[in-house]
Length: 459
Image (cartoon, rainbow, N blue to C red; front, side, top):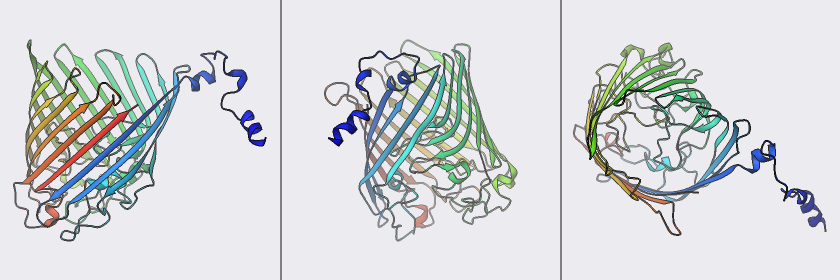
């Protein structure tokens, strides 16, 4: 009797309201006419190192659900969360015995702060208020992000997220202006939210320019990220992208990119891309102590140039030749916790952040067509880094290397399993410079094969 009475008084939908038409301007419509969405993800990963160095494996499964209300006076609320389980893995807490180095890839499926955590891996991801009209979107709160320097870098279970105010304004079809102010970041491979200054060094700190272990983790000043980006179409064949990102009291980064269509033909287009990046330290790079600063102001400005020549066929095939040069000046730095490199020579599972005096080359063939459920790519690159012992130019003690990537993906487009995406990525990296027989220069870096099997389902 009590249970029956309780159910009558606390039903989510009162009996007298079930057949009532809800006013589209009411608070009820705001919540009841919203949309739920979900995502499940399975990733199995393996890394096979040379000789007696430790091999690793891990398999994770996760699922999340989110909700966004219907618009009310152009305002919407959104919320989402995600949980992850470590189904099976190597012991990710135990370092390799020969090098004393920790696991690098597999731990990123879960929680880099607590590699032994197998079950308590849940995270509040979105919690925002959004205003939008035909030309403008403003989101305040926890949310997803994609910029040249802070981006999902979605190669593990969950992406990088931020808390702040992000604005996206498109006054016309040729112009886009993005503005952002960020106070907190939740990097991929973590389950917590961090103040901007606390997010530095979660993935490892490398070496200071003197060769000592960098001490900037936990010694950064109060910081915020402020950015502005402009995309402008200049005529029919040229597009300009400009970006400025300031990490207050630490460093500033500027980027300029030009994308030009060189030739249009009946079968495809030739395009040329060019990017320039400049960085400089602010307020001694984060700390007056050279071994605790993030960006050593004594090295001067960091300069990067990257270019691409691309032939894009209408059938979906694309052929790329890419080159990147990091000048022999300051090391190019960007917290790895925040996103992947914007360079055209980027191949999944490795970055060229943390170095100066770099020549990088690669060639990529990829296929992607909306009319075909299959997609894939093959990339081969040579990355001539400074000597691994040169800490002033080589933050992570990484030898020059060649890298080969191959990937293939299939989207199920009909039947019971419609919407499931299945993918495989394989990566091989080989040293092309002296490793000095230091296992710390080899483990998970070079002379290694790494692969992923991924299943995604959005609903």
